[in-house]
Amino acid sequence: MALRTKKRRRGASITSLIDVIFLLLLFFMLASTFSRQAEIEFVSSAQEGGGGEAPNVIPLLILSDELQLNGRSVAEAVLASSLNEELSQSDGIVAIELGEDVTTQRLIDILLVLR
Image (cartoon, rainbow, N blue to C red; front, side, top):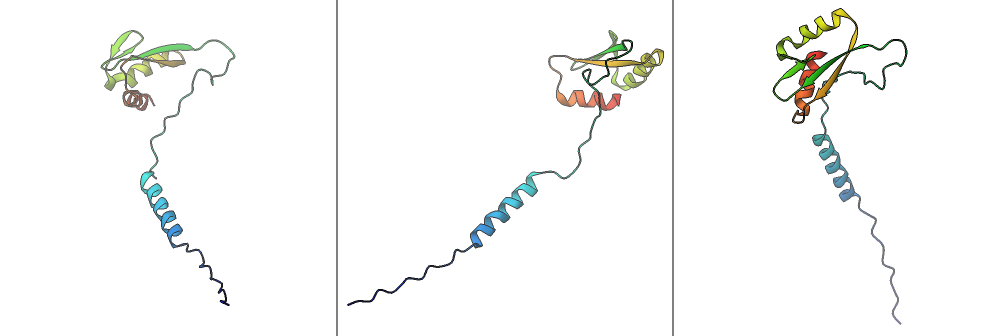
């Protein structure tokens, strides 16, 4: 009669699990950026309060190669001073309209000038 010997189960090795977790941690640390990007604060027309008289709306049209402020062409270098002249006459809101081929980077550049 042969006696059966109980086979002892090996304990689970967590070495491979630790390796996978380390690789995931390394991947996400290298894939993400820790630097803070520039933030531009603006108020949309929906957030503006709905009371009192209507504000003066100054239209700014951004085309890919030119800017138009109140229907006249303006260079980007003098955009801030031209807008200050328009706003000095009365308080107002700048409404920005984009041309069809305006890139997001172009819009951000103009918003940084306006800030």
